[in-house]
Amino acid sequence: MTAPDRLHRDAVDLLTDWRAPSPDQDTLRQAYLTFLQAHSDAMTRHNRVGHITGSALVVDVERQGVLLTLHPLVGRWLQLGGHVEATDESLVDAARRESVEEGGIASIDIDPAPLRLDRHRVRCRDGHGGETTLDHLDVQFLVIAAPGSIERRSSESIDLRWWPWSALPEDTDASVRDLVEAARRRLAV
Image (tube, rainbow, N blue to C red; front, side, top):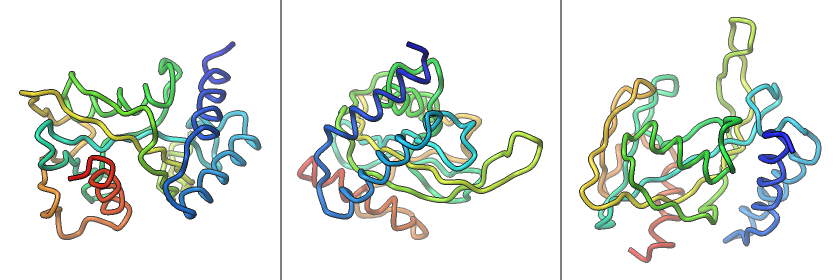
């Protein structure tokens, strides 16, 4: 089985088995499955309609706050994440890799059950030197950083910072706030 086929099968299995925490999340889950059924290349950035992405909300080991990156294209504080690569073993692995690459924390514990889903339009390179907009069908996971972890900003970020649960940046958009609240519920903090 090729890497794209393996990743596609993994995403279908993960989303089929996932018990969405709310009706709106279940509606998104069904839409993601429909998208995967319609697009054999849904796991690659080559699909110009959109693609499945993986992201992770990194929580400190004391469960006091979250690590967010100031994204250079979006200009807002976001969770860590991005495109699935052919070298990833699974969607969970993609979210883990992205959180390590963008956050610099090598020792993390990722919950393999999605925390939530978020579909959003983004600007992407069009493959011909220009830009286009397409859908990111983001599968978002919860990550706990190991004790003593030190974050390191990557070249994919303007800034990287820990934020207390109740003191997120003022301009944090609703999708990130929803993700943070979902993490607080799962962790019961």
